[in-house]
Length: 194
Image (cartoon, rainbow, N blue to C red; front, side, top):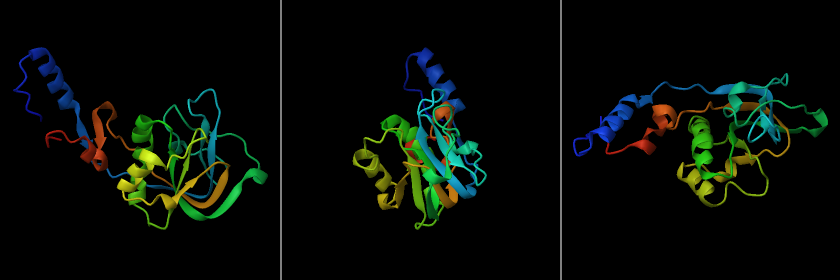
């Protein structure tokens, strides 16, 4: 618990104490999910999703729900075999790297934890919702390198792709609704109290 004794005004002090009592670290170890002979669909405009449809399909071309990002990205759309690029390799799928720092931190980083669980030879596949920027340049790339990841491992999916194996790291909470995944707790430590 944080020491709020320095606060003079009881209203805010009570509110902070209440909020603090609701914060907890989720130390449940998440499981990686494996899809064999699956597909990664890049983003495609869909009026029901802010960033569009896309994500992972299994070998039968059924949408894999955990590959989406809440109500902002995900869903199946029709593809033909002729438009699918085949890559005989294993990839870790981390969803969309958006051109928005806050969404990058919340939506993308919450799936990057899987890179710490797989061999360094596994490529990291991602999508974008626009193609006019390089998400691995500038601050995003620097942040990823600070995570200990080489940006040469990243594959940008711009057309439907089929892979021998797709590993999906389900999103982890990075601080929404007073719950933090243990692997992200270092980023939210205040006064060494959490």
